[in-house]
Length: 355
Image (cartoon, rainbow, N blue to C red):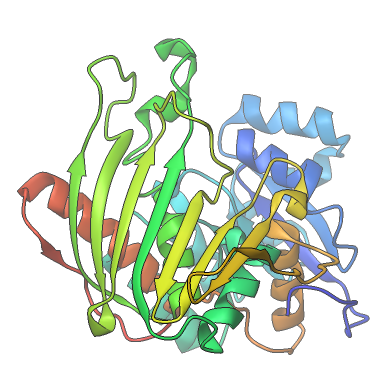
């Protein structure tokens, strides 16, 4: 579940690692709506970033650390939130797990499936929660679509189309770290869409072909736009077009989706800038006119909903929807797509065994 009041009265004490731009956004917007969670310390190895966060959050010196080890030694905690850059996700997660702490890690989980597996194995060995923040799942549109597809509203699926268009190419190269992100489209952004594809269809990907379509004026070091063909289990084919350098009409963050089936068609979009208010789903049956679908009301959404799931799991409740193990399938699509870009061939998606 992603809404409703927590059944647990005990608070989850959290150490937050990584206080850069996105980590700061977690502090301002994602953590405060979840009163069941108490952030007891912050960690950032970059001293100026740490001090800026300390000032912004009005924290005492006793709650601010440049290493996780120092924080663990100084405060009592139940879990660690990791919002550091992706190359540090697994190393920090392993350190936290070895200290007996549960882990909630930002997406993308890891630079590779192989590296992610090390954290999954460690968490399972120690009986600890390892959750990945695939926050686009926690919005009403994809949740409604999953139920429609699973319930056979349009019969057997025949094809899925996904379009994501954003313009993020204006900032000077010297001031925009996003341009230098590893695989800024496939790993940093499309990982959301790959995860939603698995969620709404209930199927795993088996093969992918990816072609970068970057214009010469793109400021990104690696792919900013690409077209993919993704074959899912059972022969279902999904087409994906994504771009950080599109001058077309801008989509919401989870893109524009169309799922066609034997008996109808579903479209959806969502994850707008201000909560779930932009989410929309239409259902057409038998070629008829599309009708709006009533969406579930969520008390919490996005990262906050995932944080509440983490709290419940830490306190002995149900496992979160996106565990480290279940997220391997989404990471495997991104990894295969990046291999396809390099090889120019269709690449098999590693089968990791769990939706």
